[in-house]
Image (cartoon, rainbow, N blue to C red; front, side, top):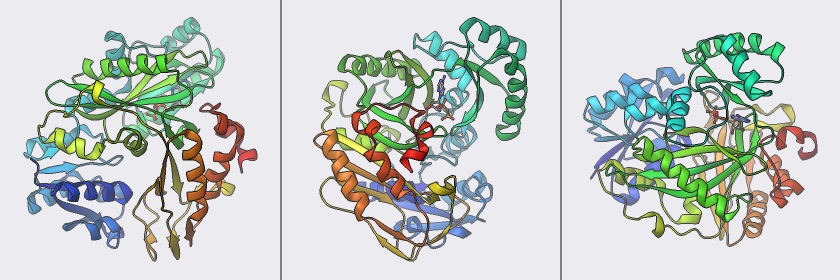
Length: 449
Ligand code: ADP
């Protein structure tokens, strides 16, 4: 069993991981930048090591400093959380080389799935439905034009190395394709150090539905149901739920089976997510696999009773999964609202500041994941997510009612937040009826505000 975990992250996910370790009797090491001296994860961990200056590349992305901190403190494992180095092949390789267990899949799997064009090729070969488009990477813009002609417009150009909703470009007609290809490819080369592109048919108004996967080192793979993340703004998730209000029982079962098949095809180990988009007719297509724990993992935990972080640690310790697919029971409904430091009335511009007053909600069915406390100064350097409010109810209606009540209780003074925006979104006819797609927020922004 792993004895001591270094948490290579900050904010709410670092706190979440530290808490799971404490409950398992595992020692914890926090790392922090000079901007995070007063951060909650530093206060909660058994030990803490400063690893550099505020800029991520000088601290939370600085592999040598993080490995040194692990060696110095005698940590035998590193949990990368999400973002930062969580999907960095080199980091996973160096951990392995130093005899430190990386809590996640192998470097090889991260590299395969991180190259989205290669992952697509692998899925095609494994019989997993993908959006019609290129087999692998495009060689040039001529190939893009030829393929787009065959599958029909609109199409979406994507960077193989892209992520976080960046590196994508929708093209509606042939005369725009060549120019878009050249621009997108050079943008990707600048942003990700890799300009290779692939192409998919652009599915108009899809749902985003993803399946949580767990795989152990003995080849057992299970899924823990889906999350519906169709409420998005600029390809970024805003409000998530499990189960999806859109899937029929038979489609859910089929997609779950395909998700397990996709993970088995790559001998997937640890926690991962198979993302699909689903069109209005219920045709579903693999878009990518995320090889890490995700922001929205708590909604799955609420309806399955499985602690995904603890499972990640057990799997990394070499334990076999303690349950089979048929042992997993789904119960109730869970929602997650992402509370960000941003102003919806000013193009969602992120902001920094001091938390002058804080009151967090509680009561039956409410779970809060946050690293905030009163008096905390939010550094301007990092992600703007402040808290995740998760609610659980027997039914979708109950989970919504609890969320409305919980959001109404929250007080966060001192900075702008999207609290009221989330509240308004919950009240929309579209959300109430479950009838929305990934374009809903952008198309109805003025009405929601
Ligand atoms: P990233 O890795 O940047 O998150 P994804 O490939 O997961 O990129 O796509 C992010 C979002 O972009 C999806 O949730 C969906 O809203 C949209 N998207 C991606 N591919 C398509 C497509 N072929 N058609 C329509 N929308 C798409």
